[in-house]
Image (cartoon, rainbow, N blue to C red; front, side, top):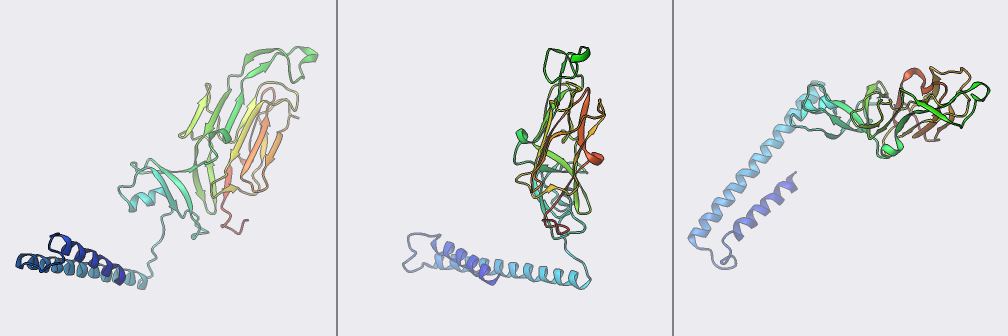
Length: 285
């Protein structure tokens, strides 16, 4: 801090000397000398003010430490707002994990002008790598040729839609992060229905392996990954033997994709939630 103060004082002195320009390297006039004296006094006064603020700050911190008070990092966007009253929507670093208080993540704080701002996770891989699709067209069925993967079409599934996500809303649970799959604040939907993040389906064909609904989750570029145990399962599906197709989860658990369908059929994360974890929390690698 002393070096900083000295450097500021030197700047002020240089400005003071150079202020009058032409006579810098000559003999100072009485007027110039008086001006320079006032400038030096002003600089000295500013230095003393800075020193006083530094001393006061040290005293406050020392007092807080003696009373056992800990100065902590913000745990949520709401805490960011409480400390920075003029904070606007944008990216902030928070420490949300109650069991891993030294672990931080970067989040996007939304609705900072409200009483309850919300945390969002930006998806750097983009909406083309984070989508949920319920496929619309349906195969025409007719007796024995019903169970097939191609053929004439008839009708359109009324639940169809395609949603692509730029950010997903998140909530924190101890050392895990939960994605709020049905928040579409930063998503774009094609068709009549929003499709929750991590969900896919169709009403295309009852034959297993013919699914046309697709999903993709791509957390590349974020601090987080799919928590251990996160898997996908079929849901409200006929026939009952239809399974999730082309299920893929990358080794680093940053990427997941699948293809799902039936007559009609859906797939979703087991337990109705997508939980994420941070590699520095709970010893996960």
